[in-house]
Image 1 (cartoon, rainbow, N blue to C red):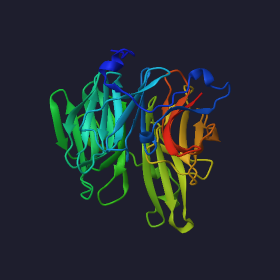
Image 2 (cartoon, rainbow, N blue to C red):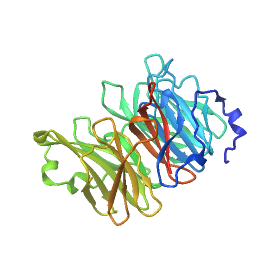
Image 3 (tube, rainbow, N blue to C red):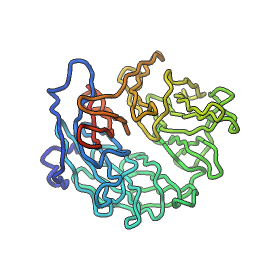
Length: 362
C-alpha cells in the first residue's frame, strides 16, 4: 500500500520545530539547501528512501533520550510518533516496501534496544533486543529482517536476530556484521570484524554462512600488513550485480588515512583510491546516479564533507558540501530523493547555534 498524506494523522504525526524549504527555491545548477531542520538530526542521523517516501531517523542526546523519525512524501516533512520503547537513537533501518519499514535503536540505560516496524500507518515495537549493541539492519523480504550486532557493549561476541512471520530467533554469526546487503534474496553479503580482530567478509545463502573472497587481496601489499596498516570496512552496497565496499586504510608510519573504494564483479575484488585525501564516514550510504555510476561522500578532517561522483567509466568528480547560511556542514548519510537529486542528513552551524537536519541537492 502506498501511504498518502491523510494517513499521516493515523501514523501519529506530531508537531515539530521544522524548517521546510519549498522545492521551487531550488537553483538551476545543483546546490545544497536545507529541507528540514531539527536538533535531533544533528549527530549520526540515518536516511532511508523507499518508493516515494524518505525517512530521516535521529535522536542522539535529544531531550529525554527518545529516538525520532521524520517522514516526507513530497515537499513537506512531518515528525512521526515512535513507540515509547524507542529510546537512544535509531542506528540502522531498511525496508522491503513503504509499508514494511524496519528500524532498530541503540538503547540507553533506562531503555534497551528494540526492533520496530512501520506498517504504512504507524510504528510498533516488535522485538526487544536484550543487551545487543545494534550494528546493522537488513530486510530480506516482507516480514523477513535481520538485526546484527554484538552481545553487549563489553562482550564483543557476534549476534544476530532473525525475524520472520513465524517469530524471532537469536543466533550467532561467524563475525560481527557491520554492514550487509543483498545480491539476491538468497545471497546476503556482509562485512565486519572477528572477535579477535581483523576485517572479514562473508555471505549467507539462506541456510548457512559461507566464506567470501577477501576484499583485502585487491589492496596494495603494504595495506595488507596489519603491522603497518589498520583497515576498517565501512558500508557494503549491492547494485546491478556488483558489490561496492568503502575501506579506510590507516598507515601507522605516515599518520594518515586513505580512503579506498572496492568493487566485486562476481569473480574478484578491485580497488581504487579516492582522488583526494579524505576518510569514509562510519556508515554513509552510496547512491546510484541512474547512469551506472555512484554518488558518495567522505570527510575532509576539518568538520566538512566532500560529495563524490564516480561515473560508470571510472572517472571522478567532487565538490565541497555547503549551503547558504550554514557553516561546517558535515554529512552523516546520503539517500536518493524520490523526485530526483540527493538528500543528505547533516550537522551544521548557522548564525545562532549548532543544529542539523536534512539537505536537498538538486
